[in-house]
Image 1 (cartoon, rainbow, N blue to C red):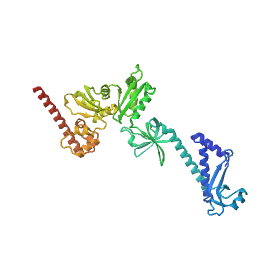
Image 2: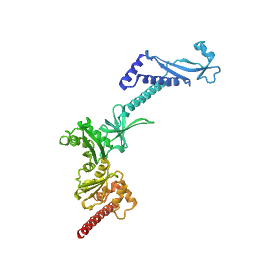
Image 3: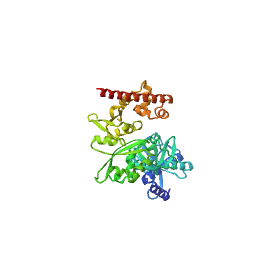
Image 4: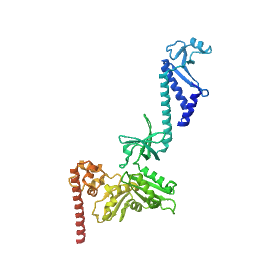
Length: 434
């Protein structure tokens, strides 16, 4: 060993950012491992690398005892005094230098493997320290490989995992593609540190607007909330801290350039930018955009809003498979029930936890058994109105039922809606007669 080793250590420190002491410890550990192989001994070895000369020495550590029971770790008082002098007593520990010249090819290979492993461990630790405080941030990378639907992303000095469950329905990546994702989690595991990414998290929507809209990045416009159903629709609520800045206009950009940049990144996902209002009625009405709301009644105690729309706006307010009202409920934090003028349509719940209302609205289907109800719930279908908007193939795919059953469901939903319309018309006629 000589100064060339120190030069290599300094080079690794510069190129990989690993502490010099960590590398030296790795070299010392590697030499100990190689020495054990070369010497074929079970002695307690210690290696010391000179920080000045680059020379390395190996010692066997032995305890001085009156009677030796284990020659690998113990030495008699007489032998110890012969080696190091008379100033030795029982209970002391001495170092016996070992010759390490000509360690051999196998021992050298072992040393190399130990050094590389220690360096890799140190790099992983550096990665963890670098990224553990970046959870929730946006990150750019290049797709290294795709394996069983999982995308592995090269971040430069480390690799991150984008699990298949965190990919949007329209996300398709190949090796070499540039990718932008949300840092969902930085975790420690037995296999090392893992950086988990997401393309479905609502935080991605917020971070993209921070990237595209200077007013958001600077804090002039604040995003108070963000919700999304990946690949379908997303909503953000915004407020301006400057009376001269329109928060919606700032996020939309000239000719829609800013919001369209976000839409492109999310593969065509529709984005609604909702102006926040301290008035719950105004905020709920805004959140149900693009539908126009006729009136809203609030139950403050239960945070429930009953929304009435013109019949022509009902489908728009509810959205495909209840998506619009569901997102509006998540964004506002209010349980939203929607009905048409005159009560022609059944109320549709937009609450995040809406199991009871879902059963009530689909209970209008005649002959609905528990298995079919579970299939509809699994597909997040909340009303007969949603069912009749879907074709047979789509309903079968969403619910997992056979196409024959899907066709029967659509027919039953059409009949249920027809009965509701007839009942409403009958009630209206009774009111006129009375």
